[in-house]
Length: 192
Image (cartoon, rainbow, N blue to C red; front, side, top):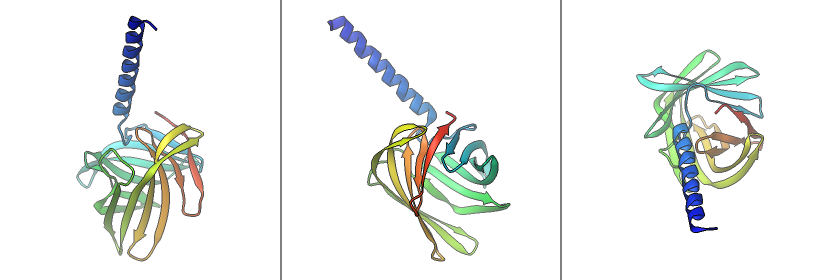
């Protein structure tokens, strides 16, 4: 390869890298925009709506659909401090989290990171205890990804506990869940 051709190739590679970084920045590390949706192998679709106000804060509403029927909502705030859940609703009952639960800390996530967040609900408290265990290659119907594996343990003051393994990809979201009983739920498509 001649010197001018090599320079052109380097410039082209730099331009492509800049465009990809710009795309990732536009989508956000923790993707959130009205109209974004994720469909999973369990039959669940999660669709982002909003923003709207809740408890004096601007939140996005993540609506969970099963077979096209809305079954629950999560109220999420995205900001420099990370992603916070201000509450959820299901079966006509709204649960407001006081204080809000930290779902994800400020970006970027890295192996070894840990975070714990607790909220109070009528009659009990809920704690999320999360840790980034490492990076894993994941193949789903939606594509192949290098994902951060997060173990999230939910604990209640009444003694309840559940553990999820979450496979998170920056700019994409969750591409796989593994439930406590070993059920694997994969991302099959997304809208962005």
